[in-house]
Length: 540
Image 1: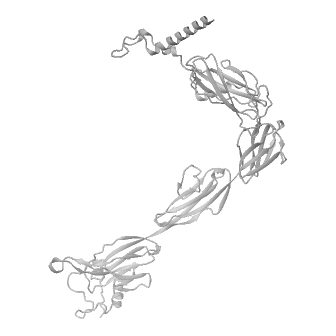
Image 2 (image 1 turned 90 degrees about the horizontal axis):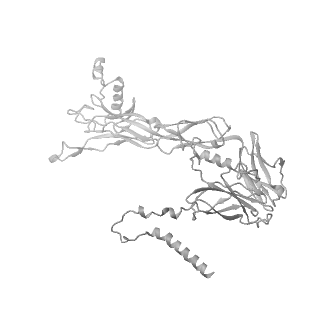
Image 3 (image 1 turned 90 degrees about the vertical axis):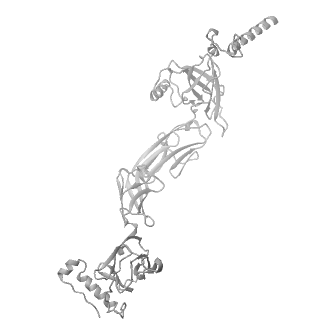
C-alpha cells in the first residue's frame, strides 16, 4: 500500500519544509522502493515509534580537481524503514540503495557503520547506524554545485555537500600569434586571457632575457612596449597559473624592423709597414644590411690586398702587406630600406699611449726612476717625458680631467706636434732605441711592446709629482699617456729628534746613553766619510 501525504496550504506554510515537489519526490521514491523496506510486523512504510534517526555526517565543501573521483558521505545514527535519498536541485539521483540517475559515473555506496556508545554490554560501544554515500567519478566542471542527502521522515531532514571543481588554468585568447613585425619606435601591446578555477594569475616573461623594462617578469593580462627598438625584439611568453595542474603558456615573437646601428671594434688600429691589419665593424640591423667599405671617399672592392668577410653581425676588412699609402681614415657604411649608418676607423703606424709601470712610491729623496712600455710595430725614435709637482688645490674629477686635456691640447691624435704645453710642466726629450735607425721595422710577428726607463733628477723630498709620457716612431707621435702620480722618499734628517726634545725615560736599560740609534746613524756615516777623505789624501 502506497501512502500519499496531502497538506493544506496553511499546514504547508506552518511547516515550511514540504512543497508539492517534495510530495511528488517521495511518491516516486516510495513507488520504487515498494516492498524493499517492508516489515511484515508493520504496516507498509509505517513510520516506526521512537526517536527518529539523525545525521552523523555534517555538510561540507569539497574542492576536487577536474577528472578526479569524489565520495560524498551521508551517515545516520540508526537504520530503519526511513528512505535516504540523494538529490541535486529537483533531480533525484538515488533512493536508498537504488540509483535513479542514468549517469554512469554515479554509484551508491553503503556508508560505514558508526559506534554507538549508548548501547552495548557493560558500556562497551557496539557498531550500529547506516546510510549511503554518493560516488562521482571523472568529475567535470559542470558537476559543481550542491548535493543534498535527504532523510524521509515526517519532517524531512537533510545535509548539503558543496562540490567545487578545480579546473587547471587554460589560455583561451592571445592578441597575436606567430611572429609580429613592428617598426622601431612603435608601441606594441600584447594581451593574454585565461580561465580556470580558481581564477588564474597571468604573467609575462622573455626567453633568455629580461623584459625591456629590466624586470624578470610582469604581472597582468596585458604587456605594453611603449617604444620598440632592437633591444625589444625576442620571444615573449604568457603564462597562466592557478595552482591546479601545470601552468598553461603561449608564445609571441616580436621582430623589430630598424635601420643599421654600427659600432667599431677599435677606433684606432695600430699596424706597421709590411704587416696585416684587420678593421672590424659590428652592425646591428633588421632586415640585414649591406655593408660597403671606404678609404676616405674611395669605395674598396675585393682585391689581392683587400678582402672583406662577415660572420653574423661582425664585418671585417683585411689589408695585407700594409704600405705607407694604406695609412689613413676608413669607414664602413651599412644600409637597409630603413636607413643607413657609418662607422669610422683610423689605420695608423704611430705608437700607442705609453703605460707607466714603475712604483708610485720612490726609493730616493731627490730623484725618481720612471719605467714605461709602449706598443709600436717600428722602433721608437724618441720619448717626451713631462712632470710637475702635483697641484695642491682641490678640484672635481671633471675639472681635473679638463685641465689635463687643456695642458696638452697642442698634441694632435694623428701624431703631429703643434706647440708647447703649460709652463708648470717640465719637458724632457729622451732618445729611443731607434734614434739612429728610425726606419727599422720589428720582425713580424713580433712582440711590439718596447720598454724604457729614465731617472728624473733634482726633485724635492717627500713631494707628490705628476708624470706623462709620449712616444714617437717613424710614423709620428702617438697619444700621450694618462697622468701618473708618484711621490719621492722623505728626508731621513727630518726624522731626527733634538736631544733637548727627548722625553725622560725611566726604567730603560739604555738610561745614561747620550744618543739614540737614530742620532748615531748619521754621525757614523759622517765619520766614515771623513776617514775615506783622509785615506785618499795620504795616498796621493
